[in-house]
Structures are given as structure tokens and as C-alpha cells.
Image (spheres, rainbow, N blue to C red):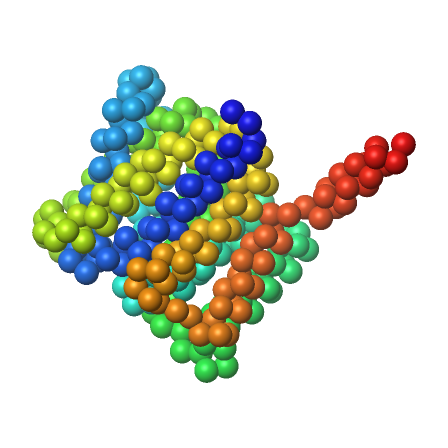
Length: 297
């Protein structure tokens, strides 16, 4: 597989993830938050166990422990995101959760006690302006759903930081599969005492659960693992900035959901801030200069 094909595979993954906000909003009409999270991840767990059973059989105690730790953080990610989409629009949620890319270097800087790079600080300022416009500008009334989505992005950044450390010590696929199983089991256990566990009872709810479990979790995870072996992290990071764009597109196509003029401008600034984080200007300039010299030798 070449890099071009791998990049297109990541575009498909991002498309799946963009659709997840609509699936979550639809599923929450008839299912509780923990119930929906539990069903989503148990479906993904069963599928990935069947596909990756040869690696699962070699799981050691350390892999179990790391999977459990990550599952707690991952449960927090989806708990806050789902609480957010219940009270804010799917398109707005997509853009707010994409702030994960900005939170990651900030958390890393806190852990190693180092001032973030200038591009991180600049990107943060641009994203704050984007959030300001996205949530209404000077007339902003930031609702609880918006805050939940931002908390979801913060938890997601924490998940990425710790997963990056854990995955270097154990088998990545086994870690990913078991964490999905733990999230599903813990979520259904909590649902049993807070909401009551039940299966979807409407076609829309079934579509949401299966879409989240099969497309957004199982397929998304598997395709991402394969594709990122053949492309760079810079390419992947820039491609993933399309997630909120796809979220807004699906929300518009299927529910007619729209942002205000200032909201669209704010959403654009959020995407710009993320691209600024992923691009390495000096590296691009050096490559351009090297290419220019080769053509003119």
C-alpha cells in the first residue's frame, strides 16, 4: 500500500467519526448515556476479538492493567461528549471536540513542566477566538452542552497522551481491543444502577448503536491501525481535522442543522488553529527550497 491509499483510508475513518455525533444524538433519544456507550463498545469488542483473536490470546497482566486504566479515561471521553450532544448541536459538538489536538501538547507541557511551543500558544489563541464566535460571540450564552464537549476534548487529549506511553510497553492491538471491552462492561454496569439496561426498541436507535459500534469503533479502529503504518503522523493529523467538517455536513444533510454566520466563521477558525498545530512551516519551507534547487540545477 502506498501513502496516497493510506491517506484516503484515513479520510474514510474521519468520515465515520464525523457521523458519530449524529448517531449519538439519535441514539440518545431512546437510550441512556451509559446504555448507549456500553452497547457501542461491546459490539466493537466482539467484532475486534473475532478478527484479532491471535493477538488477544497472548495478552499479559500488564496489558490488562493498561487497558483498564485507559478504559476509565475513554469512558470519561464519551460520557462528556454524549452529555454534550444532548444539549448542543451535533455540528457544534464536532468542532468543540476537535480541540483535542490543541489540548494534547498543553497536557504534555504540564507533565514535563515545559512552556509550550509558540505555535501551540498561537493556535490556542486562534481556537479561543473560534470558540467565542462558535458559541455566539458577544451575545454568547455558553450552554452546559458546550462545556461538556470541551471537557470531552480535554479527556480525549489525556487519553492520547497516556495511550502513547502505554502502547510502547505492550501490544497495541491487544491493548485497543481490551480497552473497548472494559469500557463496554463498565458502562453497562453503571447503566444498570442509573438508567436500566435495555436493547434499542426503535429502528433509529438500532441504526445508531450499530453505526457507532461497527463503523465508528470497530471499523474505524482497524482501518486507522492499518493506514497509519503507511503514512506520516503529520498527514494523519491534518486529515483528522476534517472530522468536525463531516460532523457539520451530516447534521445539515440529515437534520437540517445549521450554524449562524459567526458560528461558521468560528468553526473555520477552529479548523485553522488545528491545521496550524499540525503543520511544520520551517520543514515545509526547507523541502520547498530543496525541491526548487533540484529543478534549477
